[in-house]
Image (cartoon, rainbow, N blue to C red; front, side):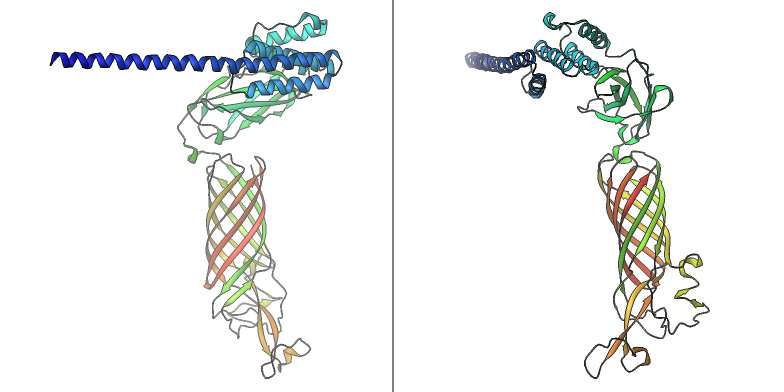
Length: 471
């Protein structure tokens, strides 16, 4: 028994020895391959820097700039890391080339700052040094040390609340003119930054209200950055490697993000109604309507409401419809309501010369809160009537058909009499559509709504499109 146990122990340590040897062989193979790939990438970058120097000395400045920009882009997107020292050499040369091409201090300093952040020990080649370049280099060195520019005055935000907008302010006190300012923000742990444009106010103070849908997680981080008139960075409140961190209070899930505010929809469209048997035409109440489809020609929807959350919207709407002309040869008093000019005294509640619906609508939006295109569903209810255009057959022998176009075979000849029906007074509906948000305040909404109207029955489909304004 003891011999068997010693045999098992012996086999056990032999197995571990084999595994260790294989691991060492794999590491010995992988490390040189990685080193070779990195060396090849650095060799490529070194050749491109030398090529750019040649172009620069031949006064081919645009070509030199293109070579360096392409080389830096390749190095930064490569899976194999390039040493900071080699990347810094490329940035330094790019700054020199840009200064020679356009004498733009902002662009040059921005390139020098990136060089010093890639390699704090980077230096300016003496062969290219001029008093002006030396001054720009010293300014870049100061910026690179802290990541914060002394020209930027900003009080970091102490805390934020999940789902609620966040106000950020910063002032520019530099000698150069700031052309624009941005805030780069992300949730801690995310890879990509979201950029927001700030708006200038008096005395060089710039402000921004970040929408609540972007505020979430345990913490967010941000950097305020000022750009010169040429678009190059001239100052920031912190560096991207060491941004401002803000704790977030609350645990609002993305589906419950609060972004309160109002909205106004101004839509136009058309519709069609399926009429059931038994409805009465407006001008000819003695006639009955056969089941079938009728059009509502043209209408305008005006809706205003409140965004309770980023997904839940509630509003009041007015659907106003321009009524078509029709034959009112037989208009008469009916049910104690006087018909005047084709509209009863209850047309649009006796306020406007047309037909309208008034009601409440609730929308539920789908998709990510910051998506440009989002779908939604809706439910609505209210009062009012819809006017649908119909054609009724009149016997060709009637006085009404005199001088009108006659249809049908011999023995059943007829002409058409135009009239309308007005299903309603109550309606319930469901719908759906999409919102394409151009910006934080303007979008395009397209919606289809199916409504059941009663007690004068009808099943109506409306299709509308138009701008949405948020505030």
